[in-house]
Image (cartoon, rainbow, N blue to C red; front, side, top):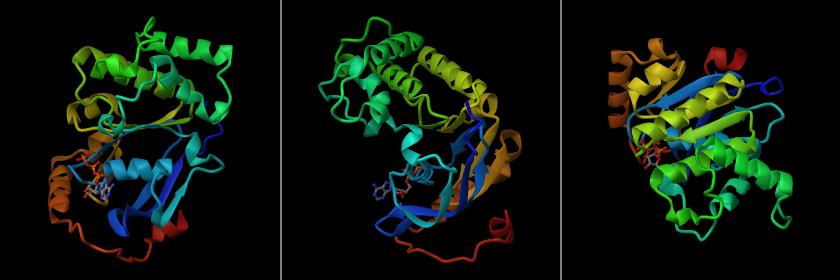
Length: 256
Ligand SMILES: Nc1ncnc2c1ncn2[C@@H]1O[C@H](COP(=O)(O)OP(=O)(O)OP(=O)(O)O)[C@@H](O)[C@H]1O
C-alpha cells in the first residue's frame, strides 16, 4: 500500500491565519508507514498543522513535500465540532463521500461503490444503518460513520483530528483497532490526541508541538516530563498577534 508513498516531509513550515503564524518553523518527516501522535497544549497549532498538510490552509512559509501525491488524496477526519451533523444526508451517502475523488460532483455511485460503502459500515459495526439520517445517530455512531468514510478512501495517508474525543470506551477501542489495522497495512497515520497514556500505549511516534516542534521521534523519548513542561511554557508565552518571523533554515533542513 505505502510502497509508492514517499513519506511526508515538512521543511521550515509556517502556517497561520490572516498572515499571523499559528505554528512555525516545523521541520521533520512522517516516514511512510509510520503511526504518529501529535500532542501539545491547547492552541499549540496541532489542528492547524493537520489542515495545512491536507491543503486546507495556505503555506505561509517553508514546504510540505509528499512526492507526487496531491493533498486531496490524503484522507482527513476533522474535529467533530467542525462537522455539520444536522445536514439532511443518509449514513450511506456520508460514507460514499469517501469516493468523492472518483465520483465527482455529477456522477452517481456505482453498485460496486455502494457495496464497498456497505462493507465499510459493517467493518465499523454499523451494518443496517445505511438509510438512517446522519442527524439521528449518537456521537459515537457518527464517528464510526466517518471512520467508514476514511476506510472507503483507501488513502496511503490518514490524518485524524482528535478522533476519540467524547467517545465511550467501547467505541474508542473499536476505532483504535481500526487505526492499528491501517498502520499494519502500511498506511501513514497521523492523529492529534490529548490522552498521553493512550499515545504511550498505541502510538510508536510522537510530534510534541507548542507552536513549534518541541520534540519529534519515538514516543518514549519524546514525551518526557521536561519536554511536556517546556511545551506548556512555550504555549503560554506565545503572542497571538505575532507577525511572520524570518529565521534562516538550520543546516540539516538545507542539507537533508
Ligand atoms: N480559523 C481560524 N482563524 C484564526 N485563528 C485560528 C483559526 N483556527 C485556529 N486559530 C488559532 O490558531 C492557533 C492554533 O489553533 P489550533 O486549533 O491549531 O490549536 P490546537 O493545538 O489544535 O488546539 P486544541 O488542542 O485546543 O484543539 C490558536 O491560537 C487559534 O486561536
